Length: 163
Image 1 (tube, one colour):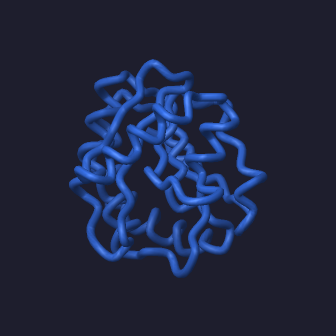
Image 2 (image 1 turned 90 degrees about the vertical axis):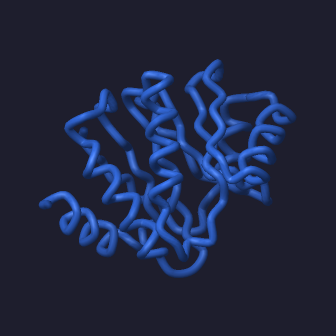
C-alpha cells in the first residue's frame, strides 16, 4: 500500500475536490455546514436524503456505514472528538474497504482541522495503516491533510512506517 499525502488549503472547504483517481471515499459522517461530506455529496449529485440518513445512523450507533452503489463508493466514519485512539473505527473502516474491494481510497479525514491536529487519533490511524500495508488489496490511500499540519503528519508517518 502506498500513502500519498494531499495537502489542502486550510479553511477552503468550498474549493475541496475529491481525488479523481479514487474508487472509494472515506468521509467523516459530519452533516454540519460546509463539511467535506456535504461538499462531496453535492459534487457527485448523490441523493442527499440517503446520505444524511446513512450519516445519522453511523453517528447514532458509532459504526461505519457503507454506500457501495455510489460512484465512487462511500464509507462513512462516525464523528470523533479527536482525543482517543481510533483503532476500532479504523479496523471497521478497513474491513469495509476490503469488503467492497476498494483499491484507491481518498481518505478525507483531517483535511480541514479546526484546531490542533488530534495526535493520538492520527497516530492510531497511521499505526493501523502500517499494520495492514502488506496484507491488503488497497493499493493507494490518498490522504487529505490540512496544509498547516504537513510537518506533523509526515513525522507521524515516518515514525509508524519505519517499524
